[in-house]
Image (cartoon, rainbow, N blue to C red):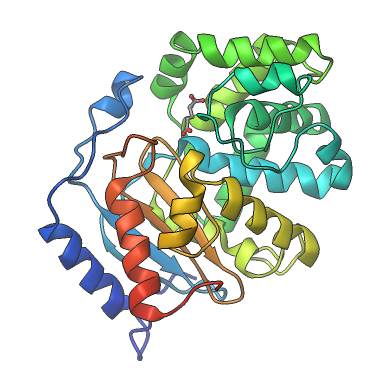
Amino acid sequence: MIMTTTPSRGFQPVLDRIAEEMERTPGRGRPADYIPALAACDPRRFGMAVAEPDGTVYGVGDWREPFSTQSLTKVFTLALDLAREGDELWEHVGREPSGNPFNSLIQLEYENGIPRNPFINAGALVVTDRLQTRTGDAAGELLGFLRAESGNPTLGFDEEVAASEAAHGDRNAALAHFMASYGNIDNPVPVLLDQYFRQCSLTASCADLALATGFLARHGVRADGTRLLTGSQAKQVNAVMLTCGTYDAAGEFAYRVGLPGKSGVGGGIIAVVPGRCTLCVWSPGLDERGNSVAGVAALDRFTTLTGVSVF
Ligand code: GLU
């Protein structure tokens, strides 16, 4: 059950304070402009939610407003695939920061079609491909998981965003074909791309995403008490988020925020405090590396004001 208040007010006062500070902060970056559906977002929008492991949620601002999750979904497909195939996945995708932009082709040739990590596009394509092989419907699997964990059966894909992604998808198509030439993609590339673009088009709110990330704070246990990942696998996913989750600004994010996090070009960021809580913040204005300007600032303030971090 979702509760918005508790007698102690939990994290609500700190969220209220952060929202006030963000309201006064000028300079919010620019929304992603590679597809019209994202370019039209107002960079002044701001929402933030914190979920405790028992499902209690606190929120502020536009925390119930659905937005385009984009690369945030890479965390969930990684977890869903890892749960099925375990360590074999790591023979097909690495777990080192890339130091290159999220959609770069350069490293792939040097490294024989094995992407550096599951959070750059090439790595996410490999993960989605493997999940597709195992389930026959990777995007449907993702949607079912997010609906169950968030308790929100209305979550869905934005067909307009998915179509727009496909219309501007030459680089992702190039990555997929290139990896297929190394034998690192199982499914026909058009099938994989369709799954990947639908995955990116999933729409959800900060409340939905803070709740859906809860299994990473509960050491792999889902909202209904069943286990998705072993404790060790949950630790691994958190570690890869910390080192690779915020494009090529993961060092700066770790320095400022001190939490495992994953960002998306829709302006969302999810973050995990193992054993304690999960967070999602959304503000569509991005910095030059693709991370939400107000989102990073708000998480920075959260860990500073509460003293909660993994360090
Ligand atoms: N759909 C986007 C792409 O693959 C995801 C980008 C992102 O959020 O990093 O280009």
